[in-house]
Length: 268
Image 1 (tube, rainbow, N blue to C red):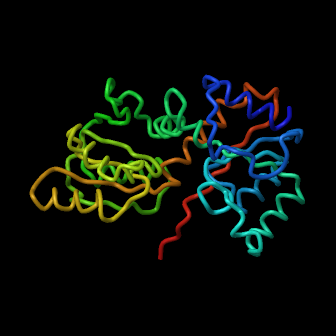
Image 2: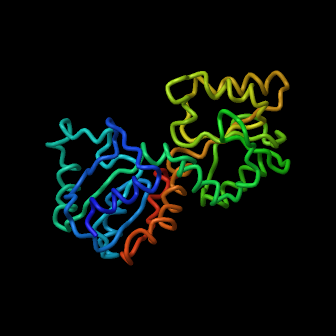
């Protein structure tokens, strides 16, 4: 199969919806490339590319950008040695990279959330019938216990929290990636917390003047409110891991590998 055939299979699997304006574009290589192996990953970093080469895969499906801006704009970076060397690595090994972002989030049930829920086992806790479909009622535990749960499930060394570690957590909202920034509506996370009477919000990205002070103030006023920060990559990587499970039946025995891009931070 060629890259274009695989891309079409993926897009058609989820209703054939194709956005006219989208960041889901071929970032490297050719649509006519004959695929020897596929890698799914959160981000096509140099480390991920090298691992793909080692596996004999020449097609990487990445959720996030390859060239450091949201739409992979390369005009500003064409003369940068980092870009030049990364592109050289891709060209030398004939690697095609396609971004699967907008269509992935627009699937009937967001495929990034689906992968995270599979990873943490919360499908049965989903509160159904809500306008915002990512609120859960879990067995009650403390914020400290919830933090330990996510550290184990998502292989994290540390987790940031706001609020008391003793906060009782039962009603939980999850906002992966940039969702916790409000998706263009800054007040959205706070409104969600109030409208759904959430005890805790599990976040991807954070802005320190929105949800953080809202929860700090709520906790200072004696309210049972808290937040837990996974970061963008840890909150979304499981969706690409899940993709490596549902993709193979569509590919006529082409091998599919998931490569974890890993959390970008080290901690001193």
